[in-house]
Amino acid sequence: MAMSTYLATALLNAVFRNTPFTSPDTVYLALYTSDPTDEDIGTEVNGGGYARKAVTFTAPVVNNGRVEISNDTEIVFDVATSDWGTVSHVGVRDAETGGNLLYYGALATPREILTDDQLRFTVGGLILTLD
Image 1 (cartoon, rainbow, N blue to C red):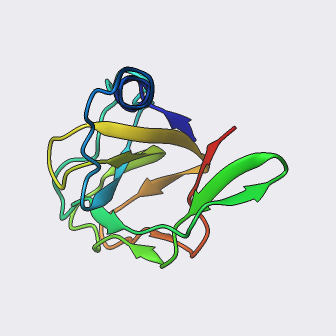
Image 2 (image 1 turned 45 degrees about the horizontal axis):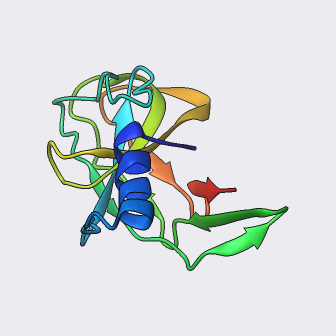
């Protein structure tokens, strides 16, 4: 997954310019039908019972020279009450609605979500890295 421009700017300012950055208390996984990009311009799923899901992460570990974290519990979205389209990307955001995109990435296999489908991410299925 890639870091958004918003988060990269905030971290660089915090570390190298002593500009305060307040970490969010909770982060949320969002689903997209198009690439959100560094600039947060993708199309997020909307309606049909969709809502972002809170996600928690493991402590950082080094894996093949990269520092990474992964989700420490299963992430289960509500059952779709209408078609959501083909979910091709995910994003980690700092608010349940609105807010800022922090990380984003493409799904290995995009998935069409139809009425009565339920999307899940297994423990460790969402990996964020820094190198």
